[in-house]
Length: 466
Image (cartoon, rainbow, N blue to C red; front, side, top):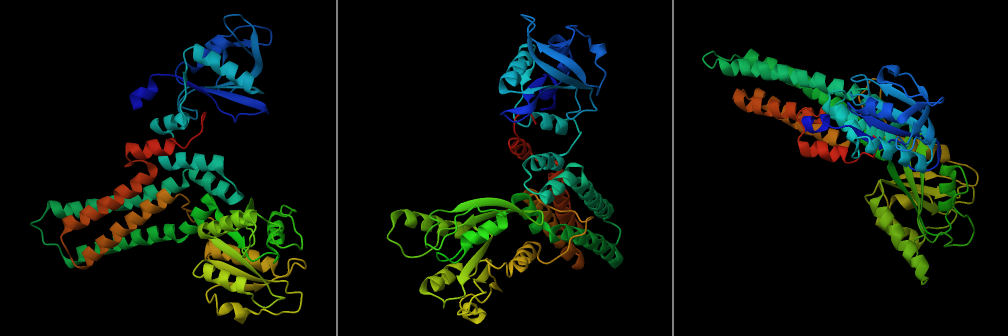
């Protein structure tokens, strides 16, 4: 694999397709600078040599068609000499006008001069193969591109800078020391292994276990920050579902009327709540209906309920619980749910105890969407539900990737098994097997022990030009 990717120069459009002020064509490989020299001319139509391109210094000019000498576009170009570049190879970036025509024409000339069209993620793959980044950092680059909130972007940025990788490497060093300790005892079987040896090993492994547990403490919050949190707004028609959606998005996204059944389909919006990406779904009111269109919306609403991370169930507190409310309660039993006794500014007919007998585990709040009652408390309850009410320190490592979480959980299981074996003063070779498996599991996070299938799957998620 290393040899394959060092033999050719690659090129691709590195910016999104569409109209923009600037577009970028990126070239990486040993022919990157020679290709630029063939295509670039100064504003005075002067050709430059390789020595004229000082690394990391922008050059203004134009890209030409060498066959006709005609200009393709005005450009700014920069040359970055390897290994001090994104891929750790020689890299050239050509900044042109963000027209797809200009970008395609310039890319076409780069390819005609000997570059190969890059595969999705190939620039980042080269950075990994050349040792500039590890797999965890590569995955963080995807997350930076796809971040949908401040917190998800910040978490990805920390991982891209190597915070997680450094922490994982430190734990792997501790596991390696434990392997050395176990190996020393295995190499000298004629020596008696005293109780203190097992005790010392238990202490070492317990420290590693505690560190892994600390990583997992905020793993669910991290996963949500990366992937988002799905909230479905449910209730019978005309209880305020659309008004609640409008409150979260801070605009009149959904039509609000006094006519039941106005919302005939699910409406989805993405918002950021305390830096956490939230996908909100406003559902059609679930009730009995003979209207074919409304029935389709109700069926979609039921499907959304099944997929939701949390449900906000609105009840009209100014009326007694209806049969439709009770049927919805049965559907929501055992789901993560916050019940909003809405219209609390009116005389109350439905109270908390009325709902509690049907949904004993649900959070219950009194709200008024028209008066703004209880809405701040609702946001706080949603955040507490996501974070578990725990406050994370800035120095705490945040696991956001489910692959990383699974690797840490596997390592923790192996370490715990090793501790149990040490307590029983069992054979050291059994312990060595579990400790080595933990060591390898953590190595999969950074790519040191990851198989080619894992690496290929990760880089297949990248877009072209990255």
